[in-house]
Length: 154
Image 1 (tube, helix red, strand yellow):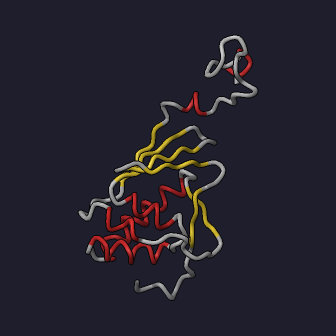
Image 2 (cartoon, rainbow, N blue to C red):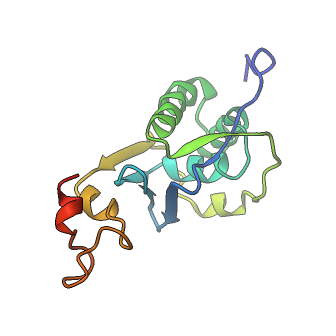
């Protein structure tokens, strides 16, 4: 990347313990336990998520994806810069001190080779259920996910 020497490399990781993420065949499902929102990451967002949250810098992630998809870095850079910004704004990832990548890229060969812009879809329809504190806010007679009258007033 052209401006790689001008700015210090940044590294990112999943925003533990507030975020939980699970890989499925064609998407990553991430839940922000603090906000109660959940997110679907699809298309090129999958390898991006895996690379960026396993210790590859943003810059090296773009280089890797450019080679994998055979797409010019200048095309990927603005799309993934916006995508990275969305991940940070939704508190799904956070900056991390520099650390080496702890994963190999072998799984990349099993990914879909056709490039499609990264997608992050946010959902808040289960917010009330995800934000219930099952120890303190559950009606003891009705069980989870029924809130107590006190927690309904919050």
